[in-house]
Length: 102
Image (cartoon, rainbow, N blue to C red; front, side):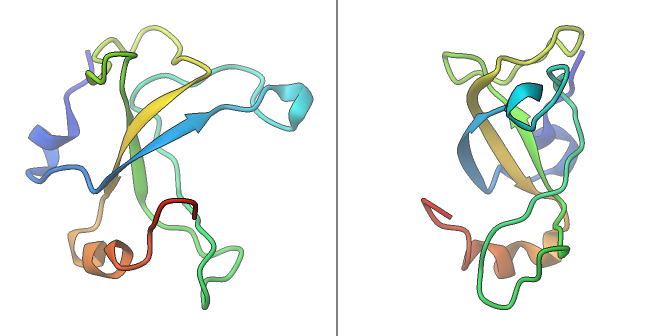
């Protein structure tokens, strides 16, 4: 059972995204991930290099916008996710840069 990030981290999500996992034939994954996947995040912004990754993690939602608590089934191929800037000291830095379309 997934424990929601808000209760673990003690602060609200920083933003929400619409996501699509690419299938292997399109250069993506061979299997869909599960809730709780730890991933690094990159976005295009002046001064960011290609290998400069950030600890901004997803928490996936169901079609009604509820956090998916069952981490025993693969995630939907597309949907929405809350995004969490994991390191609190980096929140002001990213909050001024992450915008719709980036």
